[in-house]
Image (cartoon, rainbow, N blue to C red; front, side, top):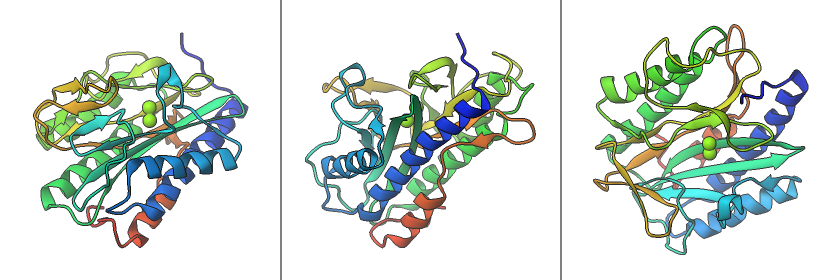
Length: 267
Ligand code: MG
Ligand code: MG
């Protein structure tokens, strides 16, 4: 069942989503080679709690951390670890916040040190494919229009692998609500989009093939060919004229650019 949001509810999702964005920006300020992803997780959790939010992922189906941090061949649901990041790592930071009874959800991928051109291209194309999907989040369109836009850009035009097993989702009082928001599909199919539909659009795009597997930690999803995967996510409300993006990359991108230990040249 889909829970369409009222104006007031949309503003509460926005508040949670902007706290997610601010938490990711806090991580981006200090992210560098030598740091562990457990340290990054702790920074995000402290920031969220200092701002009266609760990390949505912590204890979600038993997940033990505030953030999913997925490095290199890890696509999503990565476990923060004691392993130090190194030059050339590609790190996706996925954060959820619960505040005022509503969740927000967003993810951003960073490059540590400097990365090869082919990695930069994967990052750029994945971020572009997110925006292509967001452009279709308009009333009267169908879910398949969003899915097709993401897939066309990532897979058809750029020959990357689009993960099938994991999808975006509705979001609100629950972290994961109906409907599913796949990153692959046919134009003109699926549910008709209406104002007040709030969804997380989150392309998970692989440098190589689309196949993934579950790591033995029970959570981390990795590419089968062990090539790099990238993940960007926004919480978005369907709105006439232009979709309303409730999370924001503005501050994250500013901090990413200012951090000399990150490669932001893909943007
Ligand atoms: Mg997320
Ligand atoms: Mg999500």
